[in-house]
Length: 513
Image (cartoon, rainbow, N blue to C red; front, side, top):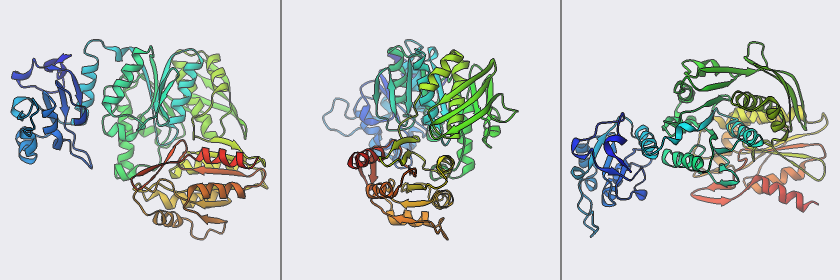
């Protein structure tokens, strides 16, 4: 429990009449409000939290936080002016009966208030080493690999990302790449109580824009790359990049920032970066940590990583040149934060990539299937380029993919163009159509495949498309199933139907034994 005056210290002014009111919690979800809670009203794209102020008051909220003044809220949301008379003990509570605090950003305030409340008795957050990964592609892989390196070296570690939230042996499903502030900080507190001091997490552009990670004292920060994605949310590539840059601008001098040395966006991201130690990792001579002697095969890769205190030889089962960069970024960060060179080498030799990230399956006829989350042009190009290099001259590279509905339409023809350029056979199908017409989505993709003379099949039933492509694969062919990766549901309209690309592949393999 904490008094309002302490909770809002350095955040906003509280009316003197309410400064000694005790707080028992904070939330932006009116369904979670309990007596003594601070309710933060957030105006979102599809829902306005101000419409639930009345409900929050009825449930016993002692403070309302808003970007809008009390009088305007009362005028535009009459139910907020006084709770409906329902017989509830709090019925009739008005806005004037509780603290009302105006802030510049309700989302930012939510994060700050959550931290203030959860650390009021003990500043456990300052005892943790939290490593964040941002970029268009590679976030999940880098966070997963760093987590594996720590655990391999007996350093208790937690993971927060697209493929789940876990520590020790417990893993639960994630609803967001980066959880909302209250859930995120409660998760971190839970990990701290379980003895976890190292946490590896993905940091999405949505999270940065919505202040979900605001208040986290990041120990380490990664930048993987930047390419077209989430333009439907950010509006332009420039705004998308600007949002990603916020992560590095807000680091402290005690942090370490490690950047992909080949990304054209690295110099921009580094500008105004506040980290005390900034390193580029790449193959070019000017990089602080250089990658040399690269050898890639269908079974993995080897290379030399020239760390500041000497070279180490890395061997990994993960395929693809981009996984050389992913492992190199993790090796650099882990070694800078206490893992021995030998510990890094042995951990990466044993490491496996996350589910749905270049996940390999073998067909009974000798063909190879790769399930990957590639759902942007850059990710599609990377995945197909890697597999094209690994296939034998006489074999085919087959790709199965679609594109998500109610998302950036501009990337669809570009993905089609890339598929036609790099694959030998194309199967177009549904991804998560959501509320869009699947046929329209496919037509958008086909717009980038004009003039294509390679075999092309449109099969909107994703299971049938996958099975058709696998049935068409001969010995030594490679099949890329792109777009959904680790996902276990397919979103059609408002329905979430169970569906897993990997499971479909496994069932096909069993059926052909």
